[in-house]
Image (tube, rainbow, N blue to C red; front, side, top):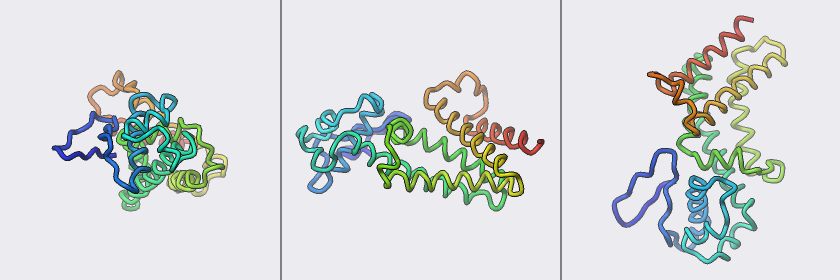
Length: 218
């Protein structure tokens, strides 16, 4: 989310949501202002540290104002998760078109897009996976989340079209675990000790190729 004021914009620290200026909303924009405030607070305090009252104060409104749009904290988190999964799905879809028919490259690009999304949308990513939102109760979250999963699943299964379903599913689980785990470790800066001179994305792509080589060899 971008922070805009009447002065020159300041660039937020990498991976950290910019705090919105107080009273930056106008009539009809309260929902968006509260979401921006919540994302900024989550970047600082995590999902569990978010309170609707704090989001209201940061947005420059009364503590009662959020209830005009969100019935509770979970409702606000669901809105953020829905937005996040939609952005995530679109990022994977764009990455899947970069392969020019090379299925292995296509999966590697989707894996890179997965991790880049986590880094660029840290607060969304945390809400999507740590928010405790029931997808069954929030179709607006479930739909884009499932569409994103299908993109990844189709890319993986396309590499083993004649394999047994259980083997296909094993590769789906392995590929998903690899990129999600990589994204999580990157957010916590845990990969710094093993990256060496390689870029994070180069190392990720090599990891995906090693995984696929293992499945191809069996």
